[in-house]
Length: 338
Image 1: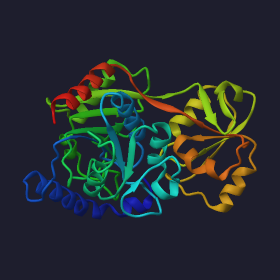
Image 2 (image 1 turned 120 degrees about the vertical axis):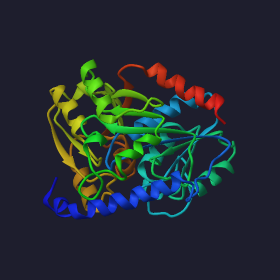
Image 3 (image 1 turned 90 degrees about the vertical axis):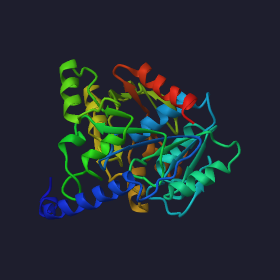
């Protein structure tokens, strides 16, 4: 915690009261949440920063897309447009945001939209053809104007919400009690060898309710990287130093993974969802080999030539155990809860 955030500690009680009161008004029905007669799954977190929302959304897409007509709706963070935008394969990250463009690029057969006003975005998506029967809301846990049918709350193994406080000194967007709205809580970015004893300790820390399910997941890194020059094994870089370029909230797990492979690389870090300036792009183009994250790639690749040595590292969310139970819970919802 830096000094500036410590100085802001007196503001924490004010932020806590404001966010608690807002939630309480929704809980009591003083503020109205809109319910829908079709399936809505909200994915989000209590804290700012990366908890693995994009891999979770992609996991849900893979699980459900062949069983039901679905769409995703995101805010489109740091885009330069306003209002509702339908994402197409020809969209740019500046128009729709990097993560929605990533979803559309990987899953061209689904409908992807962006809108900061989730109610309006849902209404617009329902006008699309085919009409989506399931809408997955990305980063929408605090959007209480919409009442989702199913809530998935993510918390990172190294930064549990139970050990944090609200903004501006802490990282929580709302008080920890907000976790009670979740149907499923997933501890993400766990070490694959996490012990049963540690899982039990974490369950107690998170104060899991009887009606909630808890899962533990890790980030899986594919053995091949994909880019402008095609697909190649990451092992090809064991004797080929490269530059790792990241514009994500927490690149530490990826750095540690590459270090565990014995790779030699230089790391260039940018802020989360960074829009690269022309000067930064020119500097990056001078590098011999670049590996980046997938959401950084959708922002970088259009600015590079087709023969540039630029790749991205595909990742996926892997359940350490109980993945089948999670799948069944989701599939049960989209069959029975409309």
